[in-house]
Image (tube, rainbow, N blue to C red; front, side, top):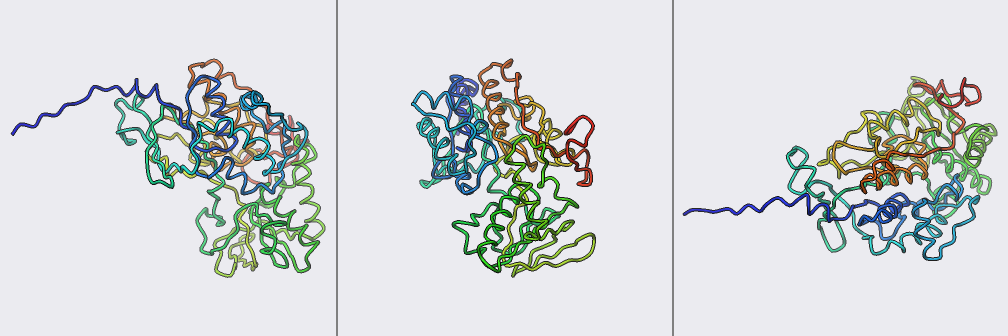
Amino acid sequence: MTLTLTVPSRTDATERAALPVAVIGAGPIGLAAAAHLLERGLDVVVLEAGASAGASVSQWGHTRLFSPWSELVDAASARLLERSGWTSPDAARLPDGHELVAEYVEPLAAALSPRIRYSTRVTAVSRRGMDRTRTAGRADAPFLLRVETPAGRSSVLARAVIDASGTYSSPNPLGAAGLPVTADGIVHALPDVLGRDREQFAGRHTLVVGAGHSAANTLLKLAALASEVPGTTISWAIRNASPVRVFGSDADELAARGRLGSAVHDRVRAGTIALIDRFEIDDVLPGFRVVGRRGGEDTTLDADVVVNATGFRPDLEMLREIRLGLDEVVEAPRALAPLIDPNEHSCGTVRPHGVAELTHPEPDFYVAGMKSYGRAPTFLLLTGYEQVRSIAAELAGDRAAARDVQLVLPETGVCSSGAGASCDVPAAATAGGCCA
């Protein structure tokens, strides 16, 4: 018997050009990406794991942002919204997360509704017919995204992919070594201390771990609860020798961020918050017995509740078949990492960056938004909006606009020049300003 195989001609490049750009995540950055792509005449599909837009923001919606509305609205998104009669909020007002969703994200999602697929979790991204080891014809092959929906598993084909899925669902472990701890019931960052989660903290001893703004927000809410409910006590554990990055500086160009740090500092000085510095956690045992070392000596802390506010990291599992170019330290794109690595500096000043810094070895694949920062902190929505504007211009073939990046971020007024928290000083004390 003779078996004859008919091999179809390769039409991958033509087919790929007709496909939409897939955006992963319907948060503020993912929706902004869709708005810029549509403004450029490119088709787009947004794949959102949650049942609604801004699902992650809604989880910390009780928290007030320290950026005003003037720095929270993307330009292309505003143009799209204004065509439907939307009126922008007061530019100077500071919304909380719920207001950000209700007044901006949800109207934007409604304007983009034909393009968004909700309850659609992307579990893997690859090229059709090609794992990461295949090179020949790779750039012409459509992207294949494996998705899980209530109806089951399916696939989506795309000409390009922008991963704006964020990092909120991927917290850093509590352990100083970056390894998971054994205790169950550790609270995620930014609990609703004065609202939904009040009973979990009232009259109990809470240990907050972490030296960022998420920790600061939680500490202040706990301090307010302590003034209302006797027996509510607060401890705050950090690895550094000084919490100056949280305390901030009067030179902070975001006034609300500066006030946040000052308020925490005041409560530490007043004794409402017990600061435990130089504490490296090895593990958290059942019953919330926290074991580790402080200043090199074995130390044990006991608490009723432990809040993990140690920051976030990108979930890269779904990208195993994509050729990524990530920095070995912070897991951000290699060209972006030196600009945001907290070992080098902590101020808000980030050199303007866009598609050139976000490009990976995989053609037409980009990570944008908070996930692009890897494990680095200090991300602002302004950064993500400029990222996706640049990426959309690149995908539309407007290389000049893609590389004409304009981004000026407000400085924190605190700068770390080189490794080590001991180098943290107010910006005014440095020659040439923050991160000069």
